[in-house]
Image (cartoon, rainbow, N blue to C red; front, side, top):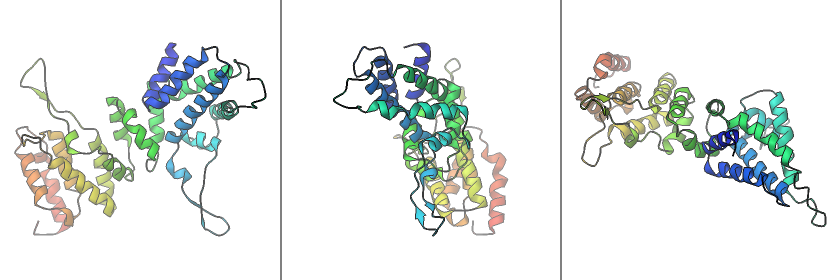
Length: 326
């Protein structure tokens, strides 16, 4: 593979190994002297292109819309070009959209036989189209910033599709992309989906890291998902929703109640501080002794934490609730 092809393959691998394997084999096939080469390349290209659109196109675009005549719900399936436009996070057609659509709409023609009684297509019939498709792939996934652009498109989705959830673990394997994603995610509708996928389980709370060259000194890793949880809690405080509240309570419990086999908890004061802030946003009926016990444990941690500096936030919350029993 050339350097550019390696970068494309790397970018596709960040989405999934299957789509990357399609591209890898396409590169190999493009150099082979096979009678069926244009058919095989056409099929692989179609699978790669449609797979990218499945992930990058918002689920909401294919949800139900109402009939203009009778206001009854209609099943709406967006077209190929519209899917391309929205997968790029655009509202209107651009030159790149035109080029992508012009190339991709030809794939089905080559993927299928054109008559078993005819001679096979010329071996080189798909070569030019393959090179044009590689130009498109290089723009979409051919470098770190291209992947960041794709993440920006996903972050605009009100809620994730099944395809996005399946691809997300690969997309977020890189620590910097994991941080970028959870710093940028704002939609509360993602919460239940991500909870189900176990992004917030207590076992993933990062442990303090001892310095290799300075034993006895520790750094305190920041768990990137906490930024998103704070954002959702803020939104829920302003406009409470039952499902969101119950999810936050489960997440707080998962993290605060987690213990290793030896009975020890993860003493990460940065996580403790965020959980403290989440607890301060919970509705009155969801506050109970286990939350206060966790705050007490955080205050008496062996680390000099941050909860003590913000304890007034909890007091102000109690005052705003007005329940003297808390």
